[in-house]
Structures are given as C-alpha cells and as structure tokens.
Image 1 (tube, rainbow, N blue to C red):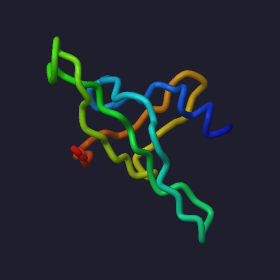
Image 2 (image 1 turned 90 degrees about the vertical axis):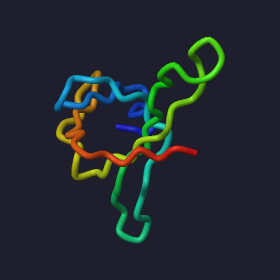
Image 3 (image 1 turned 30 degrees about the vertical axis):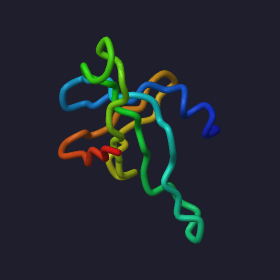
Amino acid sequence: MRVSELRLLDIINIEDGRRLGPIIDLDLDLDKGVVKGLLVLEPARGKGFFGGGRGGDIYIPWERVIKIGLDVILIDGRDLINISY
C-alpha cells in the first residue's frame, strides 16, 4: 500500500466508533525504516465563521493501529494526544 492510498482511508476509533479525520502526515524513523505514528486532522467542531475553521491535529502512535482495511484504518483511540496550533 502506498502513502497516497493511506491518505484516502477513514480513521475510525474503535472505542466510540468516531471518524477522526484524514491522515495529513506520517511520523517516520528513517534510520530504522519504520512508521512511528500518524498525524490526523481532527474535524472542526463549531469553530470559526459559520461553524467552520480548523480543528487540532491528533497524533496516533503506530502501536495504536489495530487494522488497516480496504476502506478504513481502525485505531485504539484511548488517551490520544490532541495537538492544537
């Protein structure tokens, strides 16, 4: 699977069934050649003009990825770190 294909998949938290948003970046360890985590754009929730605006970013450690399917990536979303800019 290519990174460009990963970006098209929905990220689903198995704890509450919530869709978290699209992958915007990967955290890679280039020395070891492994993925350390995913950075996901959290949907905006009533911020900004007419309820738009940008939500924060969510960091998902690779260990929290349960399953990568054809349409979704299932993750264990307990105590995820929300990164607001």
